[in-house]
Image (cartoon, rainbow, N blue to C red):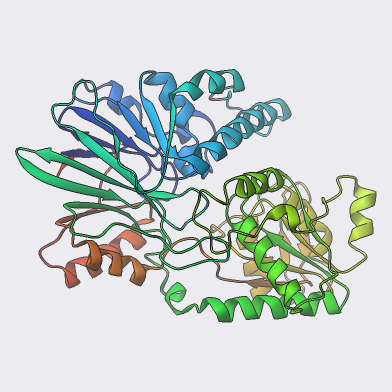
Length: 465
């Protein structure tokens, strides 16, 4: 079996991997880099097209985040006979999110915020949907290619990251030997608010392709979920009591729905005033409908929870109406989680940061250099420190409360090491992490499992395993 990395190997964007197994080409994920517009943000698909020994028969998508899904339409443009496999919730999310991406690309070009032509349009997506094959968890399905010389079965396992997220187990024979390969995708081995812990296969496996997102973050290991939830409730309560608004920037898929359910729990337990309005906006409202529609066919900690039953008034669009709601205590959950320019969270933060009664609470990853990261760094320097949330607006003083809460959807590095212990792989291929993260993971795996081969792949360089 040959493995080829096609996405970024030094970052967490553009997740895409190719396996050539006994004449079958299997692509694991087809993401784009979230910070790069146009073709430059795509996986290196030209590497496949330039090498006759490489091709794509099937695409297996781990989950619906853009850095794992966003290039799928381009993959199908170039390999129009490939079939696409994902869980049933991920298929529904994909149909919605890819159409939203097509509209966003077109709008950004029209507005001048991007110079890149759209990578695909909505009509193309309609043509592609007959290639989409949804599957239940824990149910094997065939992914043998037309030139495959050995049958290959794939099985999805609940990965615990977001709705529909799945790890993929591949089983086949190679040179008369049975082999097992497991790809984690993005994985969370502990329960969240809505999403239960991952439920993965047992070992041993021959090859483990494993994410390393939090490999360089030692602090995440010490986070106690219940303590972090308590601290978050107390911070929200303090803002509400002083008449302020708490802005909670969230990623539209996953974190937004976990936080909305958590705040609803706070209200029911009277940890915060149950009459506090919680405003939402954008695609997270439509995605909540998919959460509700799939609650009986996807793992949930509480199958009775529905977002339709949670009171969540829509964040007003007009400036006058928006300023009116800021005069009363409330909570606002809106994208983007990193507060990028020209998003609801960035626009709203500009109204709040210079007033002491308000707060911005970060509940997800803030990439260095992003507006959310700049705001957090400015707040750490002390009251009144200047920050630039949007270059067009310029600097503003920070007087509001700014805090960070650790509610990651990824497993921390010690939990990932327990996964290696459990699956007992002969080879580990580390992906989806910055260089420092993968380096720490590699050293730790080699120390604990000296007989295990650890691979840090390079883009386009085949690895025989």
